[in-house]
Length: 235
Image (cartoon, rainbow, N blue to C red; front, side, top):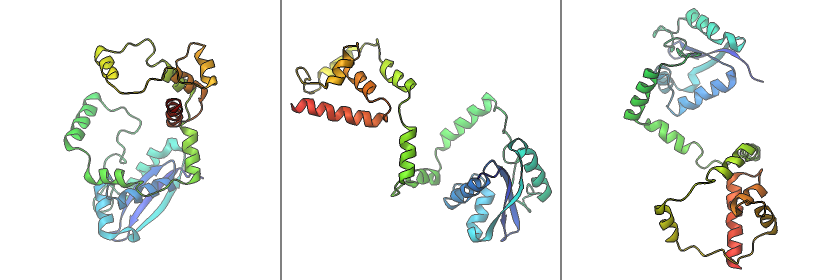
């Protein structure tokens, strides 16, 4: 069960603490330690203390449970109570670490941040973490089932796949490129009766194939279509 409220990370090595808020405290604390271990935490003061003292000297506390609408107010209260904005006593900085919470950033600031990120590029530690986060790991049956459920084609997606190129014409360059391919002709090759019946309604073969297998994941449809093409080419 999710706990919404205010939490604290206390470092017994230097007696400093970090105060934060979350609608799911348990998940948020796990996320803190995950990024701290990878050395990509956004709070450089907390990251430095973690690197120096290690995880064993960090304790977690739930300071208060409250409604999500009161998170910022109660977080500010506990930050003031423990004076964690003072570098000698805590790791917090800024307005409860979320100066733009509930606000919209000005366009000029967004453009400035975007320009800085493009100039600096991706931090090496963050890039490495993204590349290696799932390396060598296998999904559990529950995760696979959840992924399959979430990646089925909706009616809107099916309509988009069918109509995205409807009425469009190939450019002379793309036509010349396609003519230069050595793809075996499909003329005279048998096609499943189910697709033929759908094609009689005015559908193109591939679109008819998508309609026939709607509800499956898109890469499954592409795989089935490839198998079907190979069957027809081998006849």
